[in-house]
Image 1 (spheres, helix red, strand yellow):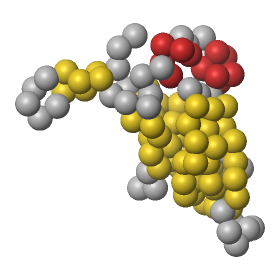
Image 2 (cartoon, one colour; image 1 turned 30 degrees about the vertical axis):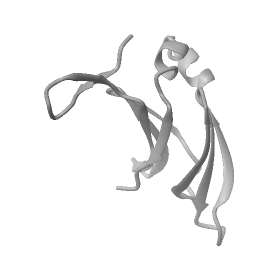
Image 3 (tube, one colour; image 1 turned 90 degrees about the horizontal axis):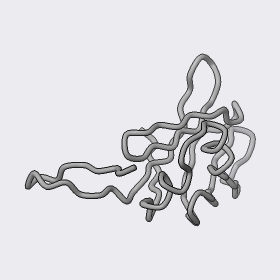
Image 4 (cartoon, one colour; image 1 turned 90 degrees about the vertical axis):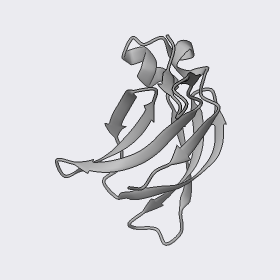
Length: 107
């Protein structure tokens, strides 16, 4: 499965950056992981305010800093995408292999 986009010169280029964010839907917080037109949403603690930093990306395993409403400072959290992708019956390695970095979006 190829995840391509078109650059400003009109050439197809392989995307290598995924986006991690959180959003409030129906009074619940969700973690959002987006790459190549695929958007994964899964429940997060309702006290999650924002992800503040990606400390490590290792082919589906994320170490991130997360800000919670009941904590003054962000705390380290771990997200493993492999079981999520497998439960969705996706080609986990085909989806994850092109990703070289993950950026935070708090928009």
